[in-house]
Image (cartoon, rainbow, N blue to C red):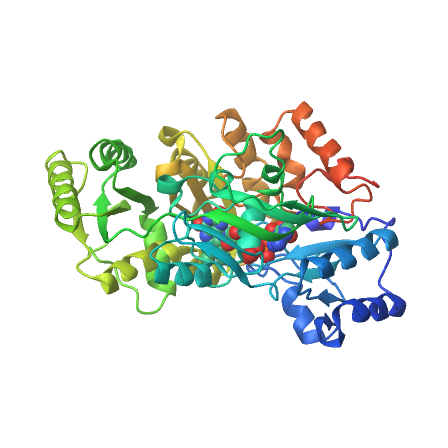
Length: 482
Ligand code: FAD
């Protein structure tokens, strides 16, 4: 059940020699050139334990200059590389496919500046998202994005995948929040686009190309990001709905009635709840017994405690009376709120513990979103557990299919059906996780041939030897040097 088997190693790439290692040690020092098998075996495999490479070398640069020197050398030698952040990506983009040199940004984790008036943060790409959020909390600000992997993922990885996450409904995409990046191209050129301006219409906005290009155009080394102020009052409701229509109507009502304070609108189905209750310790359903078909988390964030609370309560009351909500509970303190979030954020972890998982991250019209979950259940029957959850407020479904082990027959039932279905409903086959290795060859389900061709031309312009994250993002036939 994996695409890796179909790919051949590109023979135009060199393999690492003792001479190369000597050179890297001159640039980085002995201890940042890692050949240790234990450390490599961790860096070679992705978070899901699904994609495994066989790299013999991991490099840990400490500055943009070091990244530049590494890439310049790799490019001249035609050594392929894979940029790696926290390695929490879910599409096999962050690990080598064959023997690509792994360049991990984790040692570049300095906060460079923070402007307490504008909220503009400038930092190195290897800063961990949660650390940035804690730094900002002390200054009265927050990161405009939040996701379950926050304790490990790096801002450079977030930018490179254009991560969405739980605050998207309120603060929007990184395409809006990232004000600047510094990136190193394949030939070692350091491109300074590290603007700290909100408005800057001086020609092509090239930094946007690095947001979401999954390390295929360059290595992001620094980031400038606009962070919103931390507001004083947050409320979280955990609600049960009987059917998906009610969830949709509830979303519309929440936008109408909670508009200016709404900060998250997430959903999970009963199967997802079961998965979390079965596989994660210490988690319980806040609205037992678990007989409801859907659960919705609604978070509000505002600046006036009593006003915000009253607003939420009035909304909940009218939704209850209107029959949209069957039951629900509002978190009474921060501990209860985190226990609610644990359910939603824990699904990825729980489903991993259950065995094998086929993960799809789809953008679909809201009214169609759950239909594919039901159709998939009918297709697969009892052979698999089919889960639907995700960022309902952004029309982003996470469709997860859980089986005890990977099975080619199950896989053949899922793909290409899932992509064809998404295409015919004018959706996107990747809402927020990217294409990576998993979906590089499926890009045509979401992009026109002309668009894909233009992407391939841009790739060639930025990386003429194709050394940056090969086999990812674009169809293999279109990659340079193929
Ligand atoms: P990695 O996984 O290391 O890399 C991801 C991609 O970016 C790879 O292609 C890699 O080559 C490239 N890359 C990494 N760093 C750089 C760099 N500095 N320069 C150039 N390229 C680079 N994603 C969401 O969008 N929303 C969610 O809500 C969400 N929730 C998640 C929950 C869990 C529990 C997990 C495990 C993952 C979740 N993800 C989510 C996916 C993942 O966390 C994000 O894609 C995250 O942004 C990846 O960051 P990372 O540092 O781990 O990058």
